[in-house]
Picture 1: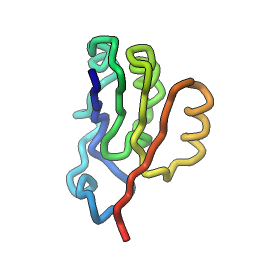
Picture 2 (picture 1 turned 180 degrees about the vertical axis):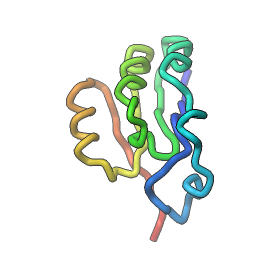
Picture 3 (picture 1 turned 45 degrees about the horizontal axis):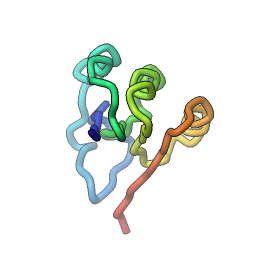
Amino acid sequence: MECAVITTYRCNARCQMCNTWKNPSGIEDEITPEIIDKLPSGHKRLNITGGEPLLRKDLEDIIAVLHKKTSRLEISTNGYFTDRIVNISGHYRNLLLGRCNLDE
């Protein structure tokens, strides 16, 4: 089983191929780590996505919850927050941070 967890509809980028930033979520409307913890374990792959997941101040809490539920955890990011990416990637094995941008 594979799963994508949309953690936010906020984004710091203004990519032409995506309009998520035009309708950002309010922080109070975003999914919590407690709700995410209710997902079943045993996923082949879990993708943390958004918006820009690294805008979440509690992203490390979300990663801690999801990391134990899968053999492959991915975070889809625009790559802007490099210091945070380096910090997070140093704490978790089998964590893939990726980026896709179709802008010219």
